[in-house]
Image (cartoon, rainbow, N blue to C red):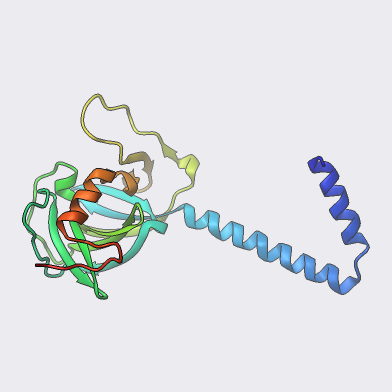
Length: 199
């Protein structure tokens, strides 16, 4: 059946419904439209934060929580950009210094420094950032593709947006490769159920 035939069939069936059922269908369609609009708005919402003097952003649906800087337990053999693990709600979460991951110089933490807990490929990780700025609504058409790079690992740079400041849009799923995630979790002795054990 063609799409137009489906539309005609639905219209004819609705026309034959009692008034109260038509009102119920109309109410349902309104709720469905509102839910779709809310989902679209969520995809257009970005948390922005500072890394040095550069403003970065990532989609809000990747954000789990934002917490102040807390004590981080360092672990041997972690990559240099991984500062260690923190305990949050009985879960041990690996923490990455975003400055180091992006090749910037490490600086002392301040009272603005915080940890953004994000979801990377289905796992919780912490990002140490220099400060959270705002939540911005950035429609897809406002994001320009990044310039092509001839060197360096920039797969995590999804695009560039202009608001009050230039915002580099990060795709957090590409901040770490699958191999890096596996290595980090293995070094943390992270087991399949998410429990963490130190020998």
